[in-house]
Length: 208
Image (cartoon, rainbow, N blue to C red; front, side):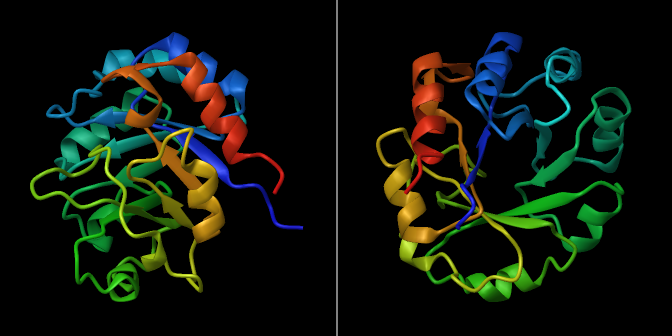
């Protein structure tokens, strides 16, 4: 029996949205520590949100080329389970915080996905996201799912343009370990639509 895919609801900025995601069966929530993002949270906001998350839902902190000091400051105040790096970080940078991490790869045309993944031997997973120049994530765009490796040695997390309407097709096409959604379940940037969150998780986890 194939395990149902895990679901991460990213870009949470409100306690109430975290509660909705957890109640609907999310496996993880994502907190964005990147000021240029409309979904960015302060350390204080993040700590409040993380407090309401139960022990069986992972709290993931997303960073983009952050300074060592900033990541350390976040970790000292917010109980993050996993780190997610979306910039030009290398494996050495990512491992220094002694926390499980996964690395986002933006699926630029011509990218050798397997070679790019091999540069992060310490990662517990690799997230594949759509590419748009100058935008490190949250584009709301999909990429060609046929490019997702089928024989990867680490779990693959699929992101980029996922919605309640296309998530079942995405999972069937890629057989990924997990799916990650942000804009596709929002009422507006940084504010989740409860009905969309519930629909996304239900469809992602529907028995096939």
